Structure formats: C-alpha cells, structure tokens
Image 1 (cartoon, helix red, strand yellow):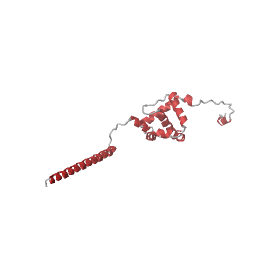
Image 2: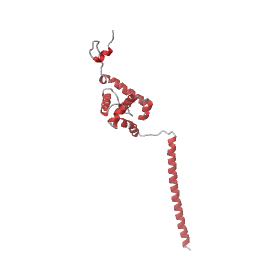
Image 3: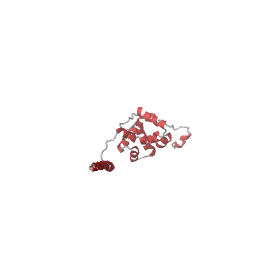
Image 4: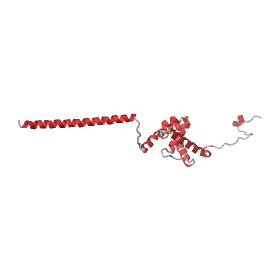
Length: 179
C-alpha cells in the first residue's frame, strides 16, 4: 500500500506531462493558424511593403525576356526586328542618340517598350500592364527613345533626292505635273 501513492504520483506526472505537451501543440497550431489568417488578411488590407529593389528589377524585366530574348521568331513578331538588329539599334541609340539607362530600367527594356508600342499600336495602359510599370514611366521612356531616334535621323533615315522634271525613270511618270 505504501507504493500506491508513488504510482498515483507517477500517473499524475505522466498526465500533466501529456497535458502540457498537448497544450503546447495546440498553441503551436493556433499560432500557425492565426499567422496564416493574418497573412491572408494582409492581402486584403493596404500596408506599404518594403520590397527588394533587385527582386523587383528582375521581376519587371520578365516581359522583356519573353518579348526579345526568347527567340528571333518571337522578337520579330513582337518588335518587328530580329535580336541582332534590336541589339544594334540599342547600341546606336545609346552611343549616338544619347539614350541612357535609368535607375529602374535598362536601355533594352525602353527600346522594346517603344518598338512594341509602335509595332502594335498599343495604348499606355496596355503597356504598363504588360511591362509592370507605371503609366508615367511608360510615357517617359517612350519619349526618351523617341527623342534619341530623332537625334539619329541623319544616320537612320535616308535623305530624299529631288526628282527633276525631265526624269526618265518610268516610276515617276505618274507624278509629273500636267501643264
């Protein structure tokens, strides 16, 4: 009979230990659940988030990768030139036209955005969605590339040669002024 209290004490200790273990597991599950619920809740409430500049930079370049770098076929379909020509144009715009990379956007992305707009007649809203940029950024980069191309007009565009009135070229006979 003297051993009976020791057995009861041992059983009590085991029960208390089991209860504490169950309680800790319940607290862990509850805190995980509340944390998950809080994460889901935070998706529906506005909180400014601190994001990594590097991750944003590469995430925003994803559309450029699919547009230009995927293949020559995709590049021709989307920006109306192959990749080699695209890179040469980017280089000319940088060296001769004075186009510069911004803090958030490289030259190739600016040029791809410009060519995509003019080749498909797209609106600013569409481009800002595809390139994951603001409307102001799209507009600013479009005008930067346009100004660089205008500075390159002597290099890129052929100068017209005047056609004389006594031209014998058969292509111009339709444009002669009747007297």
